[in-house]
Amino acid sequence: MAIKVLQASSVGEKIAAAHQMATYWHGEADKAVNYSGAVISTSVGRPEKPELVDPRHVKRRRLGSLQGRTALLHAIAHIEFNAVDLAADMVARFGGDARISDDKRREFITDWVQVCDDEARHFTMIENRLLELGSFYGALPAHKGLWQAAETTCHDLAARLAVAPMVLEARGLDVTPAMTEKLKNVGDLESAAILEVIYREEIAHVAAGTRWFYHICQREDRDPDIYFKSLLKIYYKGVLKPPFNTKARELAGMHASLYQD
Ligand SMILES: [Fe+2]
Ligand SMILES: [Fe+2]
Image (cartoon, rainbow, N blue to C red):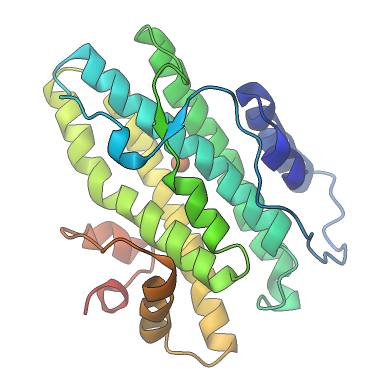
């Protein structure tokens, strides 16, 4: 079912597949199954629109204008859409990963099935807001950096956890409160309310990533701070930019010693 999410190329199909997987897993799935994971390709189904471009070519606009807010929400919709795939990939590709102990496997899968369900819901909230504002997901170009992060870490669960939940999603925790404030300041309370929901739930996603990263470190007798930094050196091209939302990161179990020198 996770592979079905990944392969779905239409927006509606991908979102529906994500919810279906969650309903199945929380309900009738035989969770005692000996899950061995799947060897899957890193190619992923995507709709024809939005056009995917280099991040440098995505225009930035001021939030005071309707266009600016539409552009911001479109960028967030794109992040949520990619996040659906990233969570499904965690289930399909890493659900059977030997670095997770067998007695924790069900819990591991449950976490990412839940994240996938959340991301699909986040996407729909933003998509509906875009429609209310007279736009839609696909109306603007979007950047292709997010799935690239998945491709470069497809062979290493610890690297995936470090880069996706613990860097990219944690970055969301850093920037979302200020964005929400700006939306409120320009009077877009509806969009601000959606971002507040997303923000709260993303703390749990970062927490899940961090917890499983620590699980691997503990099993492999690694120092989390050192290992995290060494993985980023290989797999993350950017720099970790302050200011950090240390309060939210702490709630997610990310101690400052992980991401600060
Ligand atoms: Fe999300
Ligand atoms: Fe998330």
